[in-house]
Every structure is written in C-alpha cells, then in structure tokens.
Length: 390
Image (cartoon, rainbow, N blue to C red; front, side, top):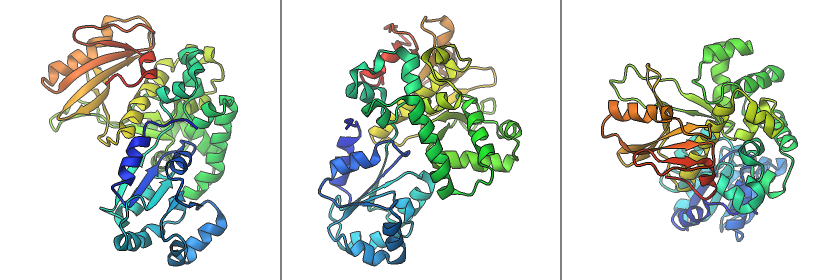
C-alpha cells in the first residue's frame, strides 16, 4: 500500500466529525486508504447489487445493521442513504462513525451536503503525487520526465508495477462501459470516445465548446453536457481564469486539463517515452502534470480554495495562480530545460498590471537544474519528488 499524504488530515477530521466523505476518481485509492485508516469499521460496498438493493428498498433496516457505524463505499450508488444518516448521527454524533467514499463529485456533493450539512467533513483524493510515487517506488524517476508523464499517477500502476498502456486502456474501457452508464445515457459510445480523445488534444488550452463540438460532430449543447459528465466523473478538470470586475481585457474561458496526465497521453496514442518528448503537445502535457500536482497538494492539505490561471488580450499569461491569504503566488510552467528570459514575461506583466497582488512567484521547468534567482526562482520538476515548492 502506498502511504498517502492526506492520511493525517483524514484521521484528524474523523476525530472531529461523525461523518467523513472521501471523493475522487475511481482507482485513486479511496477504498484502500479508508479501509487501512478505519479497520474497526465494517466495510460495505454499494457496488454489490444485493447490498445496493437492500439499501434502496429499506434504508432504515440497512443502516440498523451498523449501529456503531460503517465504511460505505461508493455512496452515490444509494443516493437516499445520506438523508437517513442525518437522523442517526443526530442521535449519536460519535466522531468517525461513518466514512463515505464516492467517485461522482457533483451529484454526490449535492446529496451529502444537503442532507448532512454541519455534520460532515469533505475531502478529495486525487491520484498519487510524484512524491508519493517516488516514496513507494524509488525507481519511478529512472525513465525521466517523459516516462513519469506516460505512466501517470493511478496508484495501482505504481504499487503493482503494471504496464501503463494496458492499465490505462483497461481504466478507460471500464469508465466507458460501467461508470458512464451509471451517470447518463450516451447513445453513441464511439462518438463519445472520439470526443474524449479530442479533449486530450486540447490539453492545456482554453475550452472552446463550439470548436470542440464541431470537430466531434455534436451540438454545442451535447458538448457542454459531455464536458460536465467528464468533470463529474473526475476525468477532466476545468481551471478557471482569474479576473477582477474591471478586467475586460482578460480571458474568461477556462482551460482544460486531465486529472491524470498519463490518461491524456494514452488517449493521444502515446505509448513510448520518446513519443511523449517529441509530441507537439509536450509543453501542454507538462503543464497538465504540474497543475494537477498543485491541486493534489492543496487537496491533501484540506485547502479547497480554487486555483486559477491568468491571461490577458495581449497574450501575457501566468499558468497557475495559487491563493496565499488575500494574495496570490504565481507559477509559470515551461517544459524547456534551459531558462529563457521570456519565461518571466507573464509574471512581470501580472505584477505590473496588478501591483501588490503577488506574494511571490516562480518558474517551474522541465530541466533538472534549479536556480535561486532573487525575484523569480526557477525550480526543476524533480523538486516535486521531494515535495511541493510552495
């Protein structure tokens, strides 16, 4: 089992709240972590048809079988349970009584937060970080950055040393054949798969639903629905832009990223490290990798403040803006190994146009050499193997 950075926070919240919910993609390690952290709780999988039927037909009778609490896995499969849990935890608010996991974020959040407001702590567990991967397997960096990105970060790939190509193919097939059918009815699976691959080709780019829909041969409405579906099932993340009320010259469309860069590589047909390094989307894939590392780190610390990017109409851009109190820390992401003066242009422009907003800034590069510059330090991606740079 891979030691997860979120573990101490999970234990802390379970000592304070009667219900803790752990959400995240399938195979991100939610069940493994929860079962290891709470071995005293009965484990109940709502993926089991018989168990799910019992929970749906007789929620009170189902929960009565677990008077001391339980670990309820994939809670979104029994959407009526949170309402009945409210009565139970009001009568007995023992901390850590129920641990819930789920892999559908929007529907699950709505069900749980409405029914258990004030009684529940919410955590998001994304695939493992680079530091967690290296801690589990010190050889993870041996293939270099292209191999790291090609392998992705689903825990099973690293824990069991699986072939990433086969593992990611199985992951996507399972998503389409099982999870997708639970979420909605997609009549043309082949067209949907083409849509997802087209999304991979737009990694790190501004989301243009009209263009995406046209290329996929679907309407703007369908493209919007499918993007929402991919978000709900933790396949993609839309990074919102940062702007102020008077920011008329700022871009206001989100940027599209995949929760796992390895899945994005697989969808693009990349199978060897050399292909990744030579691909026209190399820079965008590296950006995807860094943005998701930042998100994982914040979620692992229980920080739910959203990350943003910045771009104005003149083309000045900061790839990542991270809240630090009332200010922001800017990170510019560059896949190149050699530092170029242009790497600092976006940070300089943001600082000039929005004085006092930046608490600091840095440039994160695809090379192995860090530079302790006085204003904008340069960090190698390898620094992430030891922990976050901010």
